[in-house]
Length: 282
Image (cartoon, rainbow, N blue to C red; front, side, top):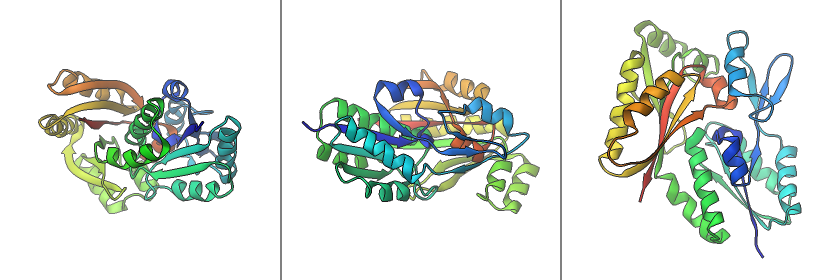
């Protein structure tokens, strides 16, 4: 009998509860401080990271080839004949390529490595939808055909409190960062089909950014029923406001509050992030 393992990296921001509920195996990034390094989500919480950021901005590193290989071998030991591995965008990290290389080390399991072309719970929703397909008893081949069709139904939009962390991480030029801070412009960011960050629009201050996010979401709800996940990176107050504004709108199938941007992504976005993931429902 065929048994399918489901694996993802910690940038998917899936809660520990959902990981355990759906038996999803996690490949943690390393969060590296000057005096210690941690396995993302397993040894360090988002709260710890955001408290530490004023004193030190850590670096991150990919799940090691050894860790990936051991996770696959663990799946084999559990009787899995196949593994589906979903990663954050290959344009934002080398994780996808590392996992593909590691899969070559384990011959007794058939693997499918999928580049989600996104991150955070946009990646996480794709993983959770895949978990449902496995639980429904769909075959490996059926599932890997369905996964790419799900990607086009899931989008992410968020804003950040400061451009400092994106600048320090080399994500934007210094001039762009300076202009944004002087004018209090806050970009509303999305991840395009190409798997990279795009500025969707700009807002002056948090209140206008919140209004822009609501407008964007309403444009989805005007056309489709949607599931929504409200995310926060130490910006819970704004996330709560967003949730209260949209939870009862027409065509909102589900609205979840409480998703937290984990350390692997929080290092690059800093505190104060809030936004949403939207999934169109057939």
